[in-house]
Amino acid sequence: MDLSFGPRYEAFRHELREFIAAHLEQAPRVTESRVLNPRDPQLLAWQRLLVEHGYAGRTIPREYGGYGAAPDMLEARIIAEEFATAGVSPGISGQGIMMLIPTLLEFGTEEQRRRFIAPTLRGELVWCQGYSEPNAGSDLASLKTRAVLDGDEWVINGQKIWTSTAHLADWMFCLVRTEPAAPKHKGISFLLLPMTSPGLEVRPLKTMTGDASFNEVFFTDVRIPADSMVAGRGDGWRVANSLLGHERGMLGNPNVTLARFNALVELLKRETVDGRPLLEQAALRERLLRIQGRMLALRANDLRVLSARLNGSNAALAAMIVKLEGTELRHELERLAIDALGELGVLYRGSPHLREDGLWQQHYMYFLGLIIGGGTSQIQKNIIAERGLGMPREPGLK
Image (cartoon, rainbow, N blue to C red; front, side, top):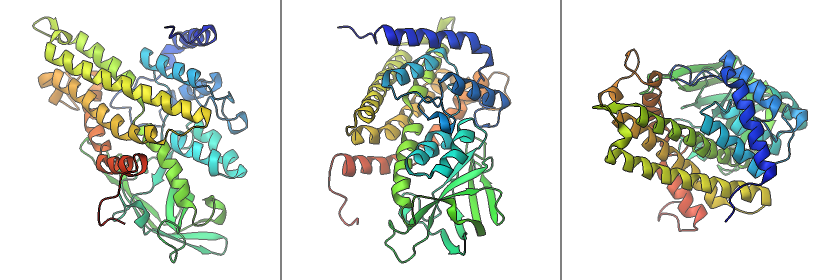
C-alpha cells in the first residue's frame, strides 16, 4: 500500500521545510509568559511572513488580505504536520482568525469583509466573543442583552461573562436580542462593536492559572451604527451556530495537540530519575501510548472533516466530537507531563526549577477550564447524541 502523497505534494513539503529552516530564528517561542499576548511584535511579524508565503490565511481571497490559494486538503495537512513536527508557531489562531473570518466570508457584506478580514488576519485587530451571560451559558438562546434601534444606531444594554480576551480586544462580535416578541432562537442578532464604545465596561475575572483571561463585560446605553449587523435582524442564531462550529474545531485542534505531544515525548526523553530517562518507565510509557492512539484518531477524524468540506458531503457527526475529545485529550496530555515531573510538576511561577517557563502547568489548568468553556463536555455529549446520532432528548426537556 502506497501511503505517500505523491511527487507534487512531497515537493510542497520540501519547500515548506526549507522555509521553516530558513526562518526558524524569526519564529516566536511560545512560553507561559507569552502564550496570552496577541500583541507580541515578534508574533505579528511572524504572522505577516506566514501570510505572505501562504502558510497562514492560505485560502482566504487576496482581495481580503489572504494568499488566495485554492482549497487543498493535503496541502493543509502538510502545513499543519510540518509546523507541529518542527515545534514552530503556526501563527495567530485566535477568535478573530479562526472564528470570525470564516463567518464573515459566509455571512458578511462586502464592506464588512474588506474592512475587517485583512487586519484581523495580520493580527492588527484583536477580537473577543460576546456570547455567554450570567443566566445564559449552556442555554445560550436565553440571553437577555438587548439592542434597540434608535434612528441609525443600535443602543445596547446588558451583560456578558466569560468573555475571553475582552481586556485586550479591539472589537467584539456579540449576540444580542433585537426582537423581544419573537421566539428565543428567532429574536437574536449578531453585531460587531468596538471595545472603545462609551458605556462599555470590562471587568477581569482571574482564573486558577493566575491570569485574568476571562472577563465580565457590561453595556450601558452603548451606541453603534445600524450597519454593524452581520446577516439580518433575528438571524443571529444561524450565524452563531456556524461560528460555534469553527470554535469547536479551534478548541480541539489536533495539529496543536501533535506539537504538544512531540514536546511531551522530548520532555520524557530529557528528564531523568536515577540517571535514566523518564521514557523508560513502563507506566509513563503506557500512558504516552494511549494518548498517542487518541491523538492519531483525532487527526484521522480531522481528515474526515476536511475531506467532507472539500467534497461537499456531510461530516457533521465527525465535527461534533472535536471539541469534546480535543480538550479532554489536551488536559490528559498536559497531566502526564505534570505527573512525570514529580515534585517539579507542582511548581508554577517564580521558581528557577520550572521547565519550559511553566507552560506545562499553565496548559494543565487552562485545558481543565476549556473542558467547561466553549460548551461543557456534558453539553457536547448531548449535542453528539441528539443532533449527531439522532437519539431522543431527555424527557422533560423542550
